[in-house]
Length: 276
Image (cartoon, rainbow, N blue to C red; front, side):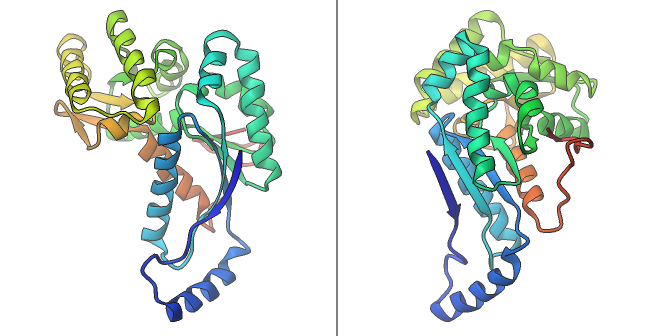
């Protein structure tokens, strides 16, 4: 399902103000960049992305709204393909990216971490640039001087090499929980978070897990490597450790790319956090 969205201008504006806002918007719209979101993976995080992009944009310029196209996929189908058929997963995600490209977007972001397990394969075949949540997060970790990070997410994200590989380029170590804890985290992710179920007792158990990882592995920060996790664990600290909220970082990068004077990378010369 493809949804083309442009939010209403200035939520609290009066009718006269709306006419002025519309006039200003008309002058700018011709040079506005459009982002495509591969969404639905899961629905709660896609909604969160949409809201965050709108809020961040309108803090900068309440007279306009960003151009966003969302292609909503079936998260259960995607998870089955992650587990059993990576070539089919690539084709499923590429079909979404191509639909977004056909709708006229200038670049695409996937609103989930787990699909980045095939990011390189997608980037090499995508008709438009892709904005990586993992590379964006790694750049921020380096900026903050973090060296050893706990990684939370789905089992696929915690066990696959795509996070450690990208972070190693920045000389940063990524530490997933132990096997039993990975199973527990994954079960909560699939059984609760993807269904929009965020419980206080689960939140406290996650905080306890981070404390154990700090004591046992010496981690100096936490990657919320699932875009539902910030909905469970809001805030900048968990167990006194700094948090890398991958949703927030990705949204910031998206909004930066949406700004009228942003320069999109060419296929031959990608920017550090945008790949083709």
